[in-house]
Image 1 (cartoon, one colour):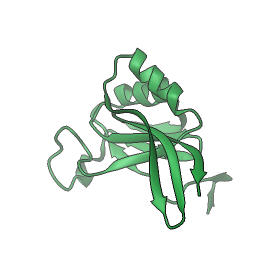
Image 2 (cartoon, one colour):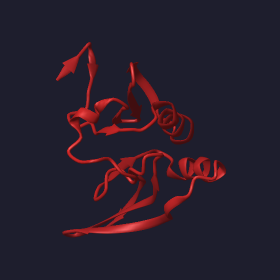
Image 3 (cartoon, helix red, strand yellow):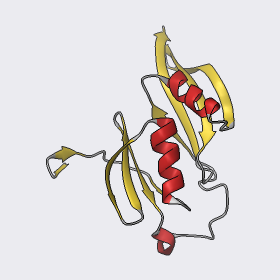
Image 4 (cartoon, one colour):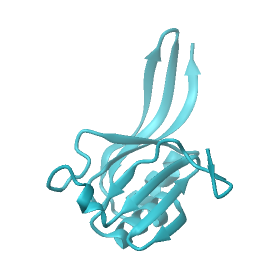
Length: 138
């Protein structure tokens, strides 16, 4: 599907945030996202092929009272080209990591898929897992 002659992901998480400017500083300055477009209290972000929406106005869509940390029970895995660079920017900004940088292996049938990853919470507590693929093992 194409809109305005740009490709759009078929699944784009929309995160309700408490402060759009704080979230934009985190996602753009530290993570490295770029802004595709904004409107009042809303931003559509990109990071490589990943897309994410931030909304500071959708309380009318809330299914329960919002409390920190937001998004309990879910983590968003975002594949990036250089996971270490993102981790280093977060550490330099004194952002606490939820899990440190580590190499993980996931077994699938006859292959072992590997990735380097770390987890961090955004300013509203959403859990983000940044990963970079590593060569698979047969």
